[in-house]
Length: 319
Image (cartoon, rainbow, N blue to C red; front, side, top):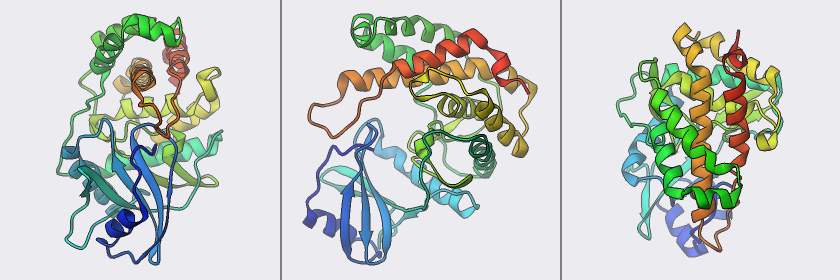
């Protein structure tokens, strides 16, 4: 959610004019994240999020991402629906880049989740997995453990060590996890990026899951492991909040109980989740263009979480 592309008032007004949402009143850039340009748009018809796709996202995948939002929204999941233009298209091209207008949902993202909030997030994640059944499109996970290993190798041990001397060890860890990765656990469409800043809440109620631009068909337990790694640690990954992690898993299982094989695989899946973010953050750190309104994220945050999962293993997820 960075701002890489700058659109003038006339360009924004012309784009919003393609939708039946009223006249443009204001548009404010959202300076967070690293992948897309985002604006909070207000019109005479309401508030919306405008996204322009900049990095990592192939426009050919947009029918999957945006169609998934509509599929889940229609089935009662708290996700934003896509606003289609007057011709019925879910996205448009602006200066050669794809852009989409998305429903604005109320709520705020939490910085320090409570057990109750984590429990409800787990339950909504399971609801989303079950509701994805019947979605006609499929998309492979392009950011699995083998990709993490390749990205880290491509960054190079020397460049990684320049970020932090301990970071180069991630190359060997990624190879180990990729070699042991399971492929036979229950699957669905997964979010795969459900950080606290991708969840909107009012109190303990989940009002929105957002940013589905890494969604894909993969193992449901992997999605739970990603969410556990994202929610149950302090900022910087320096402390594990066991009660929050346990509440997250309990909330998930209140809607969809895990199989014994899924539970046994969670420690390895969590390591793979950590390595995914280590690799993407390291790559972003090294490649983010100068002058972009973007906040680089420290890959060592997830190296610390990786070390925790490697040391403690299955007891972290014990019932």
